[in-house]
Each structure stands twice: as C-alpha cells, then as structure tokens.
Image (tube, rainbow, N blue to C red; front, side, top):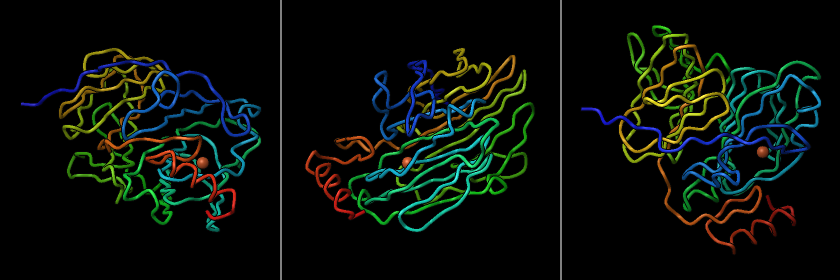
Length: 279
Ligand code: FE
C-alpha cells in the first residue's frame, strides 16, 4: 500500500532581487518560510527583460552548504576562486558544494532574450561543512530525459522508472541524497514518483497549473508535502514543476548571508576567513 504525500502547505513565492539587481521569485529563504530542512533557499528567476538580469551576480562568497543552479533559458558565465570557469546553458545543472569556502561570480552571457531557471541552496551536515569545494557541472545532453504518456521528465538527481529501465540523474555523492526532477505535463498527463519516507519534499510550479496529490497548485507556488512514500503530479491543462526532496539534517542552523554554519562562532570565523582572504 502506498502512502501518498499530501500538500501540507502552499506558499506563493514573493518578488525579490539579489546579486546586483537580478529580479526573481523567492519561496524558501524568504520571510514566508526561512528554511525547509535541508533546503535553505529557492529562487526562480525568469524574465524577458535584460534590465532584470544584466547586472548578474558579481563576486560573492559561500561557505557551509551547496548551491544548485538549473538553467532553463539563457546563458550564465560562472567563474570562481579555484580557477574554474564555464558557461551554464539552457538545460544545464551546476551542483556546487561550497564546503569550506569559494568566491564566485555568475554573470549573464547574453544581452537580450529570455533568462530563466532556479537556484536552490542545500545545507550540509556539520561533518561536511568545511570539506574541499566540489563541482558537478552537467551539460544539458547529460541530463536524462524520460518520455512517458503525456509526461516528460528531466532527471537531475534521483531515479526514475523509465519505459524500459531505471534512469538515474547525473548528480551523485550528495550528503542529503536528493531527488531533483523537472516534470513537464501535457494536458491530461499524470505522474507518480516515489519519495523516501522521512525525506523533506516539495514541488514548485513554474508554468501552468499542476495538481499535487489532489490539490491544485498554480504558477509561482511552492507546495510543501507531508510525509509518505509517493507523490502524484497531474495536470488537466498542462503545467510544469520541479519536484525536489532530500534527507533532513536536523542540526542547528546559524545563517548570515552567504554563510550557513551550526553556530554563531563559526559564522564569525567564516566572516574573518573571508575578510582575510582565506577562502
Ligand atoms: Fe553564488
């Protein structure tokens, strides 16, 4: 018997800006919901207007967690203090484990056209917060796409039962054992996905309308799921959502801007290390 996860709370994301004035919609990490263990932030950027993205995210630090960028439209150039550099194009994923610290910038590689995607922050357990920074840069063609009846899935992390085999996302070795799937539903489409019991899970609808385990959820809304072992996404008129889950960490969170540690002392240390160039 499956235990269907219901929607426990629906939150309308709020308009915000970050970096040097990039307009976005924030749900997790806003005053509406400061965190959803292990998730610390969810931003959905999406605009046709270059003025809303052109200034990008100039040089800034991170310590103690992971930043996950999923580009849907447009191109961003990424550069960091380890010397790594690359362009994130449509459909690509960057899973960056900041660990003990990196300084990086993310700047648009375009002057016009649509830019859209997601940034998700995933916390790290205390034992991994000071690990060596690690990148998983995944090109669009390396994100498996699974076509089912009236449903197309892009599997960033986790596993999906394909028509003839199990399909695994390219992101691996992450402490919170995440699921991250882009679910595209044509009118009449329906999809069920297994989510381990005890893991935190949510769906964020960014196009059209999606029924999440019996509840209608429209564009720009975050649907937080109750516990259970499965979730059902369907749509009468068509819609698109990301389905994300991960194992909660259950440790104290001390947070100051781009630093997320377990105690205030560790935050002060992070600020000192950054100011003295020790990232
Ligand atoms: Fe960043």
